[in-house]
Image 1 (cartoon, rainbow, N blue to C red):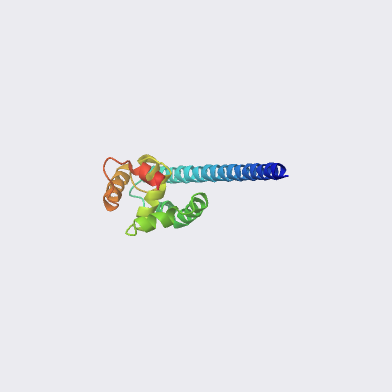
Image 2: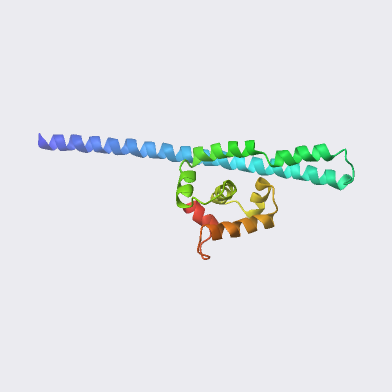
Length: 168
């Protein structure tokens, strides 16, 4: 009788273990899907901003003195600095990595909203060239922002900034 009860318990434990493994696998697949979705959204934002910047450059190249293009250039600049896009992206990022903002704000409460944006892009392992259009600045300016962020969070020069945020 004891042996059959032990066998029954073992079967129950094995089935519970199998259920937990299936749930973990499902959660892992969900995370991967959300990360893919986030990567697609990020690349879409980069492409859209690059296209707008190219249009702006083409307009400026055509005739810099013409006042007729000023409203169009202003409209493009407004689109490049869109906060709505960031809100959409932040929401998508929060779905993929729920506690990142909480963790980073707890560890580094002195970070500004722009610093947090850079932290998110670094966590996604984007290069300075990929980050530049998202922040509407040059790649060199991104490098300067990275340097200042490194100093602000007092990161050891041997530690890679992207790796730091990925591991956080």
